[in-house]
Amino acid sequence: MANIPIISGTRWTKVSLFILLAIVAMTTVLIGCKTSSQSGISDEQKQLTTLAKTLPTNFPLDGQTFLSAGLDSKTKTVLELVDIFMTNRDWTESLPQKQLDAWKKHHPYDDPPVIIHEKQSDAAFQLIQLGPQAKAAAPAMIQSLTNSEFLTRRWASSQKSADLSYADIADSDSMNRHWAIKVLEAIGSASPEVVPALVCELDDHQRGYEAGYALINISLTDTNVLPAVIAKLESDPTSPEAKNSVQVLDGIGADARAAVPVLIQLLENTNACDEIVDTLCTIGPDAAPAVPYLLRYFDQLRGDGYYRQRFWIIITLGRIGPAAQAAVPILLKESHYSMPIAVARALWRIDPQYTQNAINAVLAQTLWDPDRFWNSHAMQMAGVLPPEALMKPIRFWDLDAIALLGQIGPPAKYTAPLLQKALDSPPNRSVAFNVAWALWQIDPGQKEKVIAVFEDLRNHGGGDLPLDAVVALWQIEPDRRDELLPAIIAMVKDGKVSPGWAEMKTLQPALMEIADNPKYAEIRPQVILALRQINRALAEWWSR
Image (cartoon, rainbow, N blue to C red; front, side):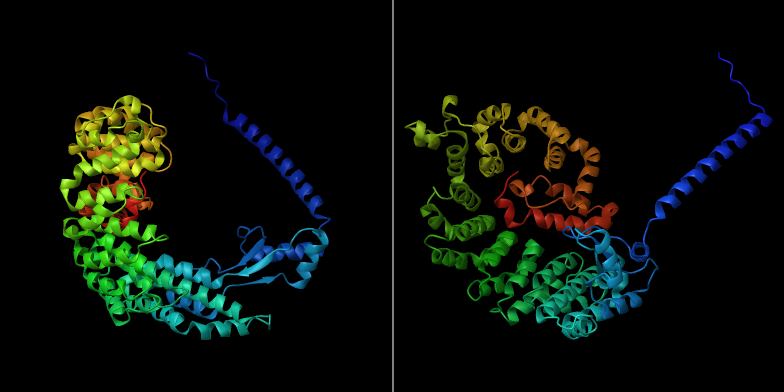
């Protein structure tokens, strides 16, 4: 074993003194260098530097260097923040002339920095961080919504520039309302004044949509939002801003079933028909009373230029399900060449006797080319697969059809060999995911094959595919749920749940289990929001 030398205390003292002298010498040299380098700085530059030190520096805005004149770091009470919010407006000004001249002298080809006064937005940000604890700020924020033009004029009159245009004043007023809405959203149900104020703001043509999104988030914990919005629509169904109120109902989702009567009334009395159809689609089976009105509206949209509107009505009828039986004759007459998968899915959901029609539509669009086989239609109706030589590769835009095949499940089991072959050499990872998930839904006996695909995507997939793979594994391997749960919770907290593939049916059981677990009570609103998102009508359009 090697001998380790022991240094005596006296020797340690000598070494320490030597190191200390070396540090002192180096410090002296560095200070001297710094002093020497500053000797040539002009007084103007020093003044500009002093000014910069008094203001917190922020990131450049659109390439423009700026100095931010915001709040200091001292903690302020809610009432102090309210006072700052109400008596200040954000604005931008040039540097004082002396500092501006100094800048131009030493930077003749650069744009000079500007000073951005951000006290109001800083105060709003701090109130938002306080959330429900800032409920004492609610009256002032409501006043900002109802009387903010007066406050803005007071702000404008205090500025150096005497020629502010009406547009300048209106823009400041808009930002004032923006921050007030954000603060009220953060306060939420802590103050009973918040919901009525935001419902009134839905009529504002400039900020009504922001008030709508605020109400959607508040509705996660406040049951007063839905009846208040319904009452507003009933009182003025012809309002040009009705779409902002309908937006709230769409965001609430299936729980907005009580709004179906007023939505039917609006379908014939407003210009927000697209938003109404989307909302009825999101509500689903409980929107059954709207079927006759949807069919009448569908008939009114005959002709070119209405593809998207007709598409969404077909999707909505399918989401309503068996209660939309009256739509079957119309759907059967609809051209299967313009939107075959949408029509096939709707018919299958309304009446299971059209299951084979739906499978045929998928086969014709995705897995084989009927133009290359003269007896293709007869083979489809007989439930017979074509020769492998007639197969074609699955394309990205075929994923919605593949999702439908998976939703149909075991009745489409005879297509499993084609899906297996497609899974052997998929053109990309999105196709691999969709085909694997459809294959497992159709034939659970393919579990081992599809798990290998999902594990690969979990470790090497791009974008959201690793999360999607986790969700699929949650369904396929229940014994691993404790292992997979943290990834799903992180997904919810990060807001990564959105309308996506095949209605994201795989994720719903996991979210419902988390929502009902007292252990995760603090994220229950986020979980409910995620459930609403994945049930929105948009899920019918895109597939992963």
